[in-house]
Image (cartoon, rainbow, N blue to C red):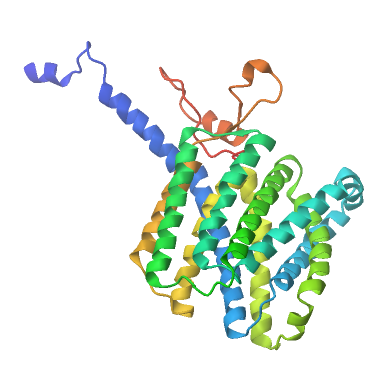
Length: 379
């Protein structure tokens, strides 16, 4: 009889452990939800594409003395033109190529100039400054991106997002420290000031380009963004190619290996440009840029076998820290400020993807639940 009474819960004491367990289950369910895991996986695919462009570029530069970043970008823009611009040419109405060019040509020319010069500035910076400086200063683009998203896209962040960005940047710092300790840092910079300025310029231009991309793919279509970038990017990069790399192209000793490296670079870059709008549509430009911070680490792992890099345990630690920060950022939703109604200005509008996730959850009881899924307006 006493055992039976002891086995029954006390009516005067609520099951606190059950409430804590339910809260813990909800938090872990959001961190390891399909939405977050899918975002992480897509981000790492983008990193692998960037790794492919870095490895092939290094092969061309070191083994074949080919230094033609604008030619490589030009090939990518041509692929975008052949696929997406031609795709737009077969459309009719407001989604047709002629309509878009007639109404928005100056906007996409600006976007193409920003994108072309961002690519060129970052690659050119390696001739003047060190790998360490590029890795560190390239992170300038993340706070610039968040600031532009705040003012242009009306994105709003919570405290955990700022903490997550700090954790990711700490991981980048760990990676840079590993580079220095392993002797991977190049001390052959001819003019550090010029190189550092180019990196900051390129990172800032990338931020502008990514904000524009997020706006277009979420409010218009992915095909329009890529088609217009292919059209005007081909034109602008082609002109710049003839101006700055005419002699360098003539000095290339072409063979099947060089052609293969150019082809792999172009396919990786085309895959990056084609997939990034898809990822950005369901996440944001900021989360995409945090996810691709691991690209340098993938390049390092390939370099261990291809270029004789030295391994350091700090690289594994850097990868883990970056991924922890990325998961922190993805597990909590940003929101978009309401543009007009005064009574909802401070509350904002939650991402529709987050709302869909919440519809499948159990309703909150005593606590006001703040949605914590990955936001599609996260800049």
